Image (tube, rainbow over all chains, first blue to last red; front, top):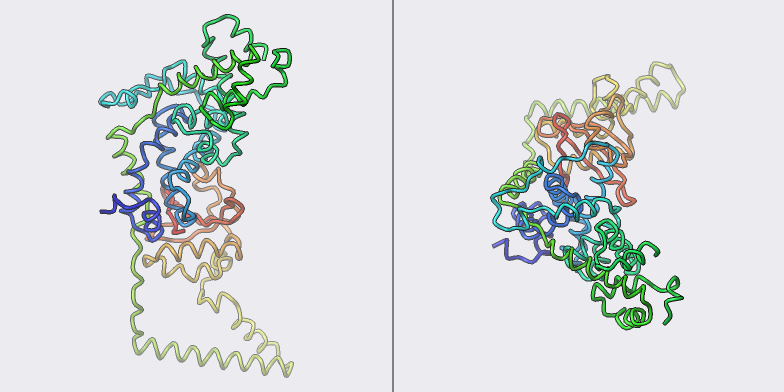
Length: 192
Length: 239
């Protein structure tokens, strides 16, 4: 019954302390939020932590939700901010990156995207992007949001989104090698 | 459009066009048709986008879903308890309270008269004792903590009996006016709270467990936060 309710109605109920409404909201959005967190954080364990923290923040701040705004948009913003915070905390606590073999995806998953992490070169290139650049690329190119949607989710002017996207893709191209196939392209890229 | 002017070209248009952003389409097409470097860059942007789109969205596995649900459920507050109705006072308590009230009035009136008449120091001391916050709050105990925690400690007894989250939240908010009590848990749960812009700290009890209360600056506002001190899990306060 609760599961069929509109997001905004569920949020109202969460404010009133309704755990079922919170669970329904979580089930509805958890995969998309996890996906963004995974691409931002780079491994499933950290992404799971970020997703969990995102929903706890949603619970804590449900009263700040403004009626009329899309809950999903708000939730993405919370998720990205949570990832920023966690990544900042990680940077302050330097540690060896977890080797891939210690971070296996669930081998029982049927969906290939759940069982396969980003192809290693792409993951490595993504990891080198600044968090600001990464968030734009994740939302635009991996999750497929339009530029205005990205701008709304990141609370940025659209010009900033375009600028970051251009520079982020260029940096990725440089990391991944020549994507256009011609040596001339690489030299042009290098010159720019 | 000449390639010579490439340095002045608005390259962000290429990113926007590669993303299918319609408002920039015409300007971007003009750029691409007139500038070889821009054309190459546009191809690069398009190919990158296509490559990343193949990565696609990820999904939680069933075990991850259940792991997360368990962790979140554990972190959520217990459903709000209904306020228990106040039990009627027993006759003996009623009489004692009435007697205490009469005593307080007598002492207060006596002190006023004494100070007006500028008489002996003993009466003045009595009046000062009667007006002391510790006395008023019923805190007979003389520890530093009880002295520092004024109104906040007044709700401690209620919270020890179970209490509710609104009261815990109110207590945390009260820190803004009262400051932290001496000897608080300033180094406890350091890891969990290291990223918070903490303005005030205090302690309390909730569900029979020691709680770290914080007032945290969040988006320019002070927000109350609470953590169990024994395992540092956060108690989600109602918004």
